[in-house]
Image 1 (cartoon, helix red, strand yellow):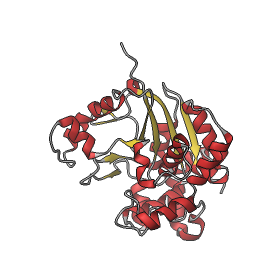
Image 2 (cartoon, one colour):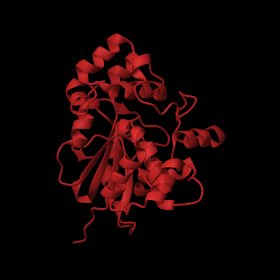
Image 3 (spheres, one colour):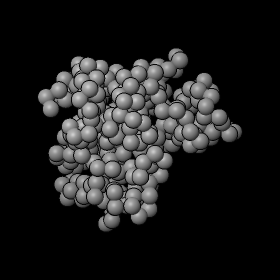
Length: 279
């Protein structure tokens, strides 16, 4: 029986650095003399929530709001990805691991490994609020909601997030496949060292010159510059730009004290594990 473990998951809670990671990977793989256009990054790491792929499997137009139908198609969608002949397929996901209505979201028989990017939930909250057009209070409630999800749209099926702490714990607990955990804050501090870990994890040789170039081509300055000229397909209608600030510790200036305490009370155990209570 053929080994179908060909998916390397690029996973994160929304607004935690997944897009940056995928654009770095695209630039490293292409190794061109100019940056990969940000609207082409999906060619190197497709998402698991694209309506078009579910419709292809169904053989007809589908209603993204029909959750039961979407879940019934998910396994076929993922098997379609691994049947493309490629040895490795990078797949972006914001879905929690585990099962939804009895359907496993991250099937181990298709999974080669996973890369999980974690970010301080205080800063996740701020970016989440901007991206989804919520108040800080609403975003804090969403991050603590076990049923939190990204509702389906014309182009994407629903994505099941759950609580921030449960999402992180689910993706970082010991699994039957290799895992790499990267902190967004460490990527900001030393992108070259952290992305070198990514390349090593997925089995791609690290070339120092190529690494430096890919980091430069995926810098916040480069990405925001591209967006200002050509726009970005993943930008929501609620915000002026997808690439807003690209910083850490924004919460110290922007988050109300009572919300800081709420986040710590809700997610403190996992925050402490990843060093976020020391800040």
